[in-house]
Image (cartoon, rainbow, N blue to C red; front, side):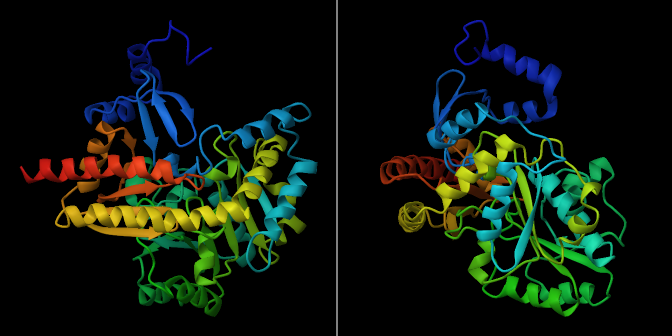
Length: 421
């Protein structure tokens, strides 16, 4: 209907995108000689509309954690469609209840209730609303250079790049940022007594996946307890086994008041997100549960998909494969780094989340362009363009990694040699 229709031409789609969809985004990529129109997609690959194949190590921010068109997830959705539709957000349903129970059983500590939405930004909005209702306080603290979504409240927590164009800075008594890993700055803000919650992306993606020093997140959690502030763990990109544990926060044995999940939660085929909250934060659900709704959030079809996603992510063979991939890809990347140590200077890694650091202004962007020529799609970090984001899928195998590493080596060395001259 679409991908094999000879009447649909790539040049026309690019022009329609300029004319009717998003001209500046389309032009930005075209100016960088990246003219993708996504065609076929399967496993950890996608094809351009012209048939050129790419290894996908961006995964749309982890959305394709389990691959494009994962056959088990596709079958789950197809079977669910024989019986279900999106349902009715006013009433209980089988899949909503079963998934909420599954999340309670698979989250740390006393997290109990699930509030559904359609995407990560909306789920962060829900977390902020929950924090304000629970504490009676308004201020939300986030980290400098962070990103938690583009929606109304979520965007106010992010870097100025995302909020200033839309006049969403928020007043100083509503939103404030402190530097990453600066616990003194955090305590100075929390001790004022007007903070409802701290929200932290467990490994900040848009800032290039800096791995928090051991103990940092635990220290922030203790400060939150000390000053009666809620801790929101944004696990949109770090959850669902990407770090080697179901939730990245578990590496620090931190039990947050809320966890936010999205992207890969829908298996890459159905939009769904969730905010999972503890008993205290669930007070509004017991008292004023009809004060928030999401018509398509927590749809019956989406919940059926997410049940399968959780099941696949928690299989022993999946966990074992992530442990293998973590070591195998690190060894391969270290071998590449040894061949160009003055350019490829660091590997940030936890599980299959990686940030590759290059000692050159916008080095990550240059490597991205070189890798594109070698059939690999990755993307640089918007707020730290020296870093190339590298997201490996949970179910990738050794053969995939071997060919990927060969292409990575060629692209990284090419970029380094070009920049020298």
